[in-house]
Image: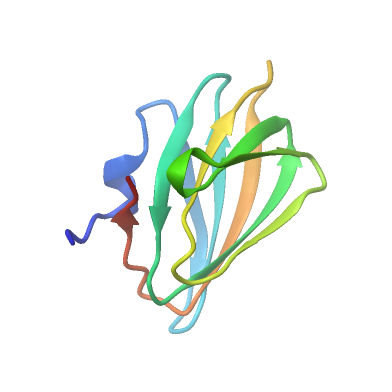
Length: 110
């Protein structure tokens, strides 16, 4: 398995802004324009909780699994679970991600 930095899997149109990072936790805002996505990946030692605050999209799991999500959806991606995101709407998709513990190792999922 190759360790991948999360910035390596973000497209140039996907913006991730880290709001804060402590010794234990990290919070970021992820903005995806219509049609943009972050491919499925996993964090072997970190939970990554997503709160959708604007737009519509799909949670991309491993093996082609996808689930709809929209503003108000809370998605707990527990350590080791495959998760990615795609904006399927016609406005920006905005997600707040709470992650713990840090540092966050990221591995792509086929």
